[in-house]
Length: 326
Image (cartoon, rainbow, N blue to C red; front, side, top):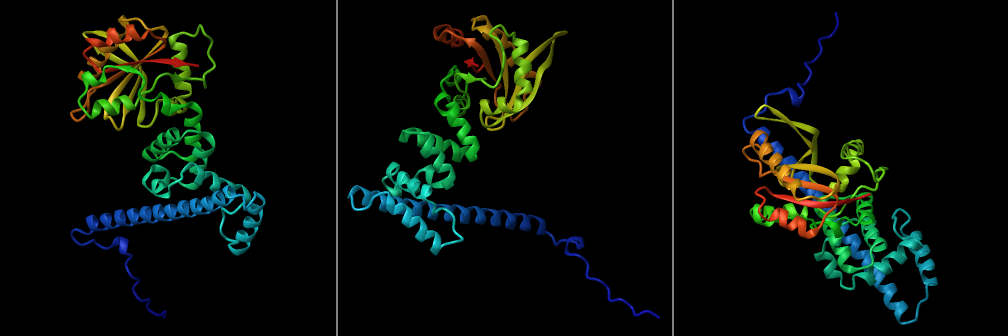
């Protein structure tokens, strides 16, 4: 006869959890994640401060003409020998540390500014791609707010996305409550750059729509953070007639639908009337109980500022008029 096996322990995942356990364990998991994030930020702050201090020393000694650039080669070799498992002590990185200290003379400002929250590699993008302090601060703030990776930050800098943000002609201040109006204004830019498209100057609105949908991932990057694609030629039935919205998005931060109408030519005042009509229909047929008023974006090849301002002045729905470039 074979020996009887001892009963195996029941896996913890199969036992009945006591009352309130699910809520408690979910809270613990959240606290662990928060602690991990704080620890990561603390390590990053210390590393940034360390690199700044090394850069400051190299900067000060060079200014006193006591140390030339040759000392960087020696320092790199000595530090690598002492800390073989620690990256960051290459000759080029030591030079970046010196440049970083020169760009940010006060270490306390670094700790208080978004640059102190970004990884070193991301700070190097700001350091090498931008020359002005204000530009670096603006892109650093956007990178922290939107969680941009180094590559995404590089792309946005090359496209000048921060410089173009909030410059479209809109009626948001008059048609949306604060702070929604400010957030909506900051969520759009002017002009929109579609240089990833290969279209002729004679391309029609449908050609432009086809190309944008075909490059939807790049289009979403150009639109900016928060836009989610809903569809193209979205049907609206109104009093027995069919109408079609060119492109429809939902903005996750604004919590509203965004209707995008494409115009292959110059802006004409009557364009706002059609867009206003579509926004009314979207609000009536698709807007949810907790959604904010839908917003319209009119993308045209060019537009007169005076025409746009007059057209928006008495328009009921919130909308913006932006130019697009190839």
